[in-house]
Amino acid sequence: MFQGASFLRRASRLAVPASAAAAAGVVAASSSGGRNDAVATCDDSPPPSVMGTLSDIRAKVESIQRTLGVADETAGKIKGYANDARGKKKAKPGIDVVLGSQWGDEGKGKLVDMLSQEYDVCARVAGGSNAGHTIVVEGKKYKFHLLPSGILNEKATCVIGNGVVIHLPSFLAEIDGLARSGIDAEDRVLVSDRAHIVFDFHQMVDGLNENKLGRNKIGTTKKGIGPAYASKISRNGIRIGDLKNFDFFEMRFRELTSAHVRAFPGLEIDVEGQLAYYRSIADRVSKMTTDTIEYTNDAYDTGKRILIEGANATMLDIDFGTYPYVTSSNPSIGSVLTGLGVSPKKIHGIYGTTKAYCTRVGEGPFPTELERELPGSVGEHLGVVGAEWGTTTGRSRRVGWLDIPQMKYSTLINGFTSLNLTKLDVLTGLAEVKIGRAYKHQGKIMNTMPSCLKTMAEIEVIYETLPGWSEDISEARKFEDLPVNAQRYVLRVQELLGVPIRWIGCGANRLDMIDRGEGWDLSSEE
View (tube, rainbow, N blue to C red):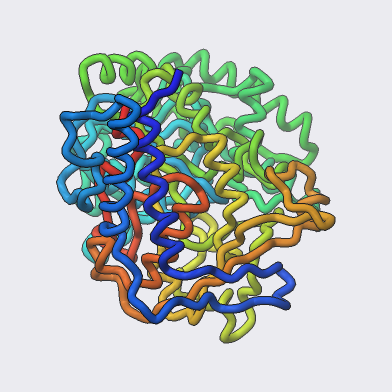
């Protein structure tokens, strides 16, 4: 059945960037070989404004709606586009999700920190301390690995769901670190009794496994995440709730350590010392432990607003990522259901976070990668200006241009209702900026993300080149505050992906962001 009004409203939304980009001039296309690279040229005449283009489109859409008999007579304008909405997000009960859409480190924590001020519950649902989020508040950096970034909202309860694997020494150190900064977190944290524990020997095994791979190493953080999930899948793992019955915990711990010593000759575990440590923290952890499945669903039923903070990113997903160079969990939309215990019917907004360029830490395919170590190169610019060093490992991140085929794949899997484009300011100062628009393999354009690593290695990237900008954008708070070429870049990315870009990161501080309003979120139509 034709859903006229809804379809036309959505079509008009995505037509806005298309029209604006077309007005800005034709972008140049080139292959990754660089033989035909050229900066896009634009007409000398000033381009029409986005809002002017919108006005024309809106009039045409309303005419079509009246012809089809599906016009919404109560609406004087297409929602959200007559101006950039500046007001607070309306308080709607339900579950919203912030996910990484590339290879991690996209800046999810900053958006979560901003959004969480309007939410009652913030939750983590997958991964462990291999994740890292950095928030800058009044010049002070807060680094989170297990706690949701929403912990900075004093009114929010933070949940660590059953899908997370938890290294308790790191978890408690994170809470204690916040306490030293004057942030009381312990009374606002709830840990699932079904979440599995990462032990120190899991981290030792992680390192042993990585070293055995030699030149074929995965690039793991060596935080024990994979071995802990392996214990979970092998059905001999130990869960947080087991600490409430320490005799039972001790029996399971001795069995688990014996199995690991047999499996890894030379592995030494101080069993008695470890048991003494866990006995000493059992009461403290148990006070934070609860059935988070019941808690979260009750919160939803009573109209609470729930925000999920994704860890890692889609291209590191154990099923959907560039396997085997992936993490050991599912940091895509499915983990919200399995890692928190909620129905898909309860999910509302799904917000994909992507840098204005692309990075990844560790080994594995990276089609749009640039040479970072070459002095004066674009790669050096992105790495240094973007401060691209891992929050968890301190390793320098690999850098490259924004990859549209990869982003389309991520969008297909997650169903993003809007995007959070971060670090646009890092592109400031470049004479030209490129977008990886398509993949070509053996002379043919590819329509999907290949699963084969050999194919990935043989990919040729087709680029579009747009003019850069030199103006400082850190003070921009409205889309119109951005330089024209920065606007064109954002609109072109939006057009290529077919998903509205609501948030635009303009600097490192927590308030250095443009929020274009609820109208730039497909979930606001529902």
